[in-house]
Image (cartoon, rainbow, N blue to C red; front, side, top):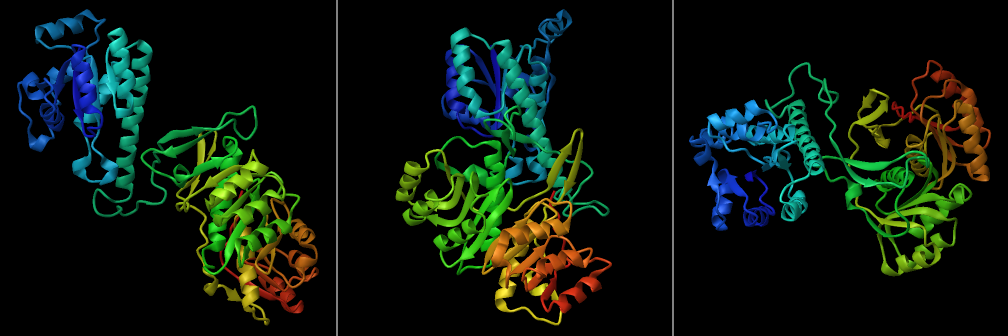
Length: 513
């Protein structure tokens, strides 16, 4: 056997080369790989010795030679290929070990690998005869198989080839994204949409399987962008059953919402309880216990089987209170004290306990419709409270502003049509996913009950008629925030003035489907 080694990442190289050499494999190496083998005292031939041609162009050209690529690409089952090798005295290459320049670590023209992808793709194409290794994580299994059987099985070569093509596809995608961002020329070309480029190259690697998808008859998994480290990779599970598809979906919604609620309130603590990606309760309070109890009281029935998100550390006191309430499928927090974990494990064995870092900003949203995809940038809360416009005679108090802000943030993350009522920093009534805004307001009012009196409300889109507003003012809501933009805005504003309530306009809609 002959193996060609040309790697940027030298992790495990010496161990692999030593094992191959011990099994009688002839080693051919290039550039820095050859230097590393020489320093380790491992016998090998340099690529230049095989090709009869020195490296040139500052190392840009070294393996791009017929004596290398004919050795990789020769189909051993085709007599004419074997004759060509014999005529030119070329030895076949049975194993290619190659990983690429780390383009993503410092994108630049010099880190666009050419020879590496060429070798990898050649070996992967000829996988009936050649094995290709693109990651140090593959070395152990491959070396073990060679030691045991003296060769690589068809199944192993097929598996390695599939991984190799995925590796080069991900690499090329990184380069395309760099071009789209203007990295290649120092700016985005005129007429190019940097947010939605002409093509999208999403390369995802499976990070974890879930028990099933949304329903038991579906399969599910969590993927991540190749080369990225999303916040989910930093999550530590202290206890509980494995995470399901919906656990992940709902916990992500809960963790992002609680960060938005607590982001502008450094002296307050935030808790959100999520069910089916919508909040059943959310609150800011003087302490985490205070915030949790208020969030739970908003809708204790819907909280059963939900996700509790705590922006801070869960101590034994809070753990006991949570454990004494409705069963939570997931509790996600900044951290847990050890005695809190003990309390929750003792009383809620199935509950998944997750410590999590701050979530990264959302990028593009991609929703597939068969072979079609709808793509948009993330829905951010762009307009600060200071830029909201009061359009009524009545002016907001500080408490009304705070309540409108809580209602607005929860409403923006609630399935449309959505109306949310908040009182004293608590989302006490949440109407979600309704075809009619009046019905959404009615649900929010019914859930809020007496807590609607003196409360603030938010609507994720404008009121097309005054009837939706009337549904809120009739139960005692005294302040409303909404995007505005309806042709009947003046009628709605007039209705707000007639009810002597505050109305704020954001100029920003937040539909969520």
